[in-house]
Image (cartoon, rainbow over all chains, first blue to last red; front, side):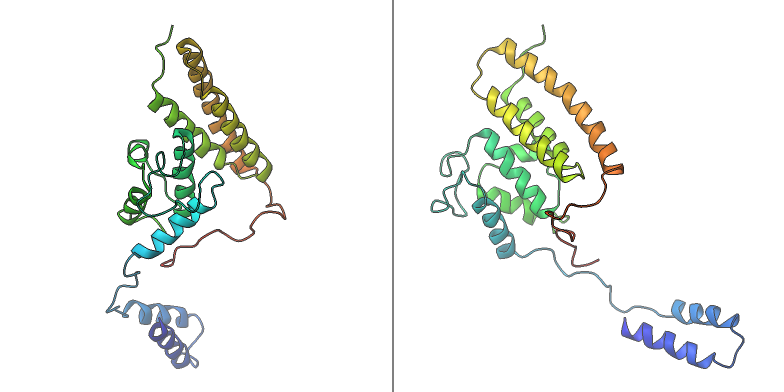
Length: 127
Length: 96
């Protein structure tokens, strides 16, 4: 990034004397010669513990969930005392937190906290 | 008469109605429809009469279509955010 800026700056400085019409084209040429050696992309998505804390935070903000019983292995219906409609709401809240849409078929599978975490971990779009 | 809906299909309908309600851009509309959806499904939760459930399902499926259209229109003409709302986008991608 900095190298690109430096190059552009250099190209602009060289062209100080040249007519102003030529300058943009030269700057463009300088940019097209720039070959990135590394891809500018994030290394990995979310870490396991970050997902876990965020999922647990989402569940904590649910008033029906007893936070003392909350753990990674807790089941929505048995341990946390949620009914099927609450479970849908939990999945909705998780979707919102990670800005994804979980398809119905896969949302049905999510019945424990761990399954929610696993689903987020294997979804690259989650952030 | 329509066949009675399964528990799964009602939950799917609930999920899509909640999701659509959530997509309204006006704060007041969004919160109203989310609350309304939750209340409607809570009311029917203990119902065991299959005919009533079938009627409920059919009605709500139609309502979902209306809701979807309204949500799109609301996204176009939603207006500004209210002062009670979080002003900045909730979460940005780290790599963009």
